[in-house]
Image (cartoon, rainbow, N blue to C red):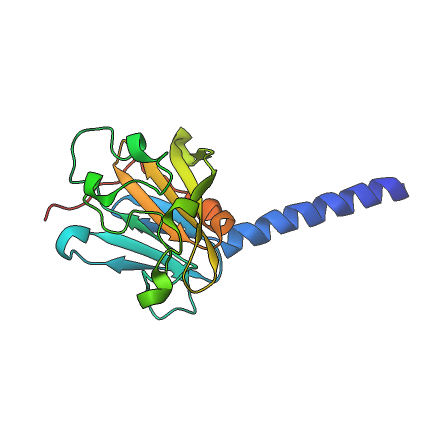
Length: 198
């Protein structure tokens, strides 16, 4: 009897944890693309501007908007201006990331995320891929994914992640807590994603 009660109590606690997690995550949408944001996270729509076009910044709520030069968040970039079809997967295994000249999306190299001199890489040759596992997401889709370790001029060592979904030509770049980014990006459903014209 006691064992039965213990098992039921454990099951109740487990279901409670799942329910709490579900309540903590908030479903959000961006041009038809959906994702779940954990408690403490926010997203900022970046309007069309030059080469960058439409972008979405995902970051801690404590930030005052999205900051491209601050580690701890990531952004979803618009489709490539290059229509070759193999961008950027063909270039993702480069030691230092894929060159932005292949993409039409700025700052796609595995460079340090910081402003001014602090943002410089100490030694480009030291950048190395430390994880190349694909990341499954909703609707049976998967991100092509690469994570680089980069040494920065400010003395820090950063992890830079790039995720790419070829069918929608969506690219994500982030620096910092790759596991936290993976958790959010695993919830993405790109089935109905469609950017407006212009």
